[in-house]
Image (cartoon, rainbow, N blue to C red; front, side, top):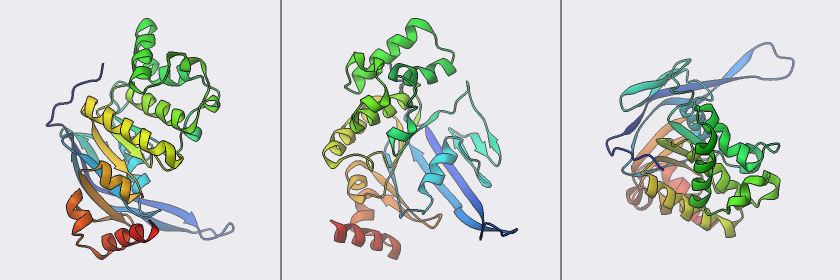
Length: 267
């Protein structure tokens, strides 16, 4: 069963900074640095769905990777309910995992093609020390929750459609009962005809589980539909934030206006 979330739960991102280094050429001995994030601060709780928008390369995915412990920040920290879980070269894992889960953009590449759906869904449970019939029960429950038949457990990712794979990616994240769900462009690799059904599923899951949610996307129409509060990021820095209607109807920053105008032109 989903774990009930106290409405006071809060995810805090405090002054995150991250640099990446690269050679100017194959033969170069020196490295140049790129500021992926610059003092990013966000407060996120379970009373709203939060959107994070920006152009490609603006730092959205870097934030997501730091939140789930895939890469460390150079400076700053991430706390949950005032407990610091991630800091500079520091990641405090509880029971082998953080209370955060990430759903990647492309489920075809994020799901192990050698694993059956049963293996994919059970892996996180095994890592948490869950065994036997409880695994089968949880897998059965999550398949019902994402509207896939029970016999899906015998299939492999290549045997599923794109929409079905994304449902499995959602199930893999949710089956370990996270308290924070980060969705990194979860619709962008799907056909337009499938996107609406996955978006509806995400809304249902978020509501039924009372999750803290960060929805990352470059698709402003989707963000406006699903988000209550929006962060706008540019070149690693947050440039504007506010209630969704305020951001879309009365943007204050030139960059936000540029994003909205580009989206309007594209549509």
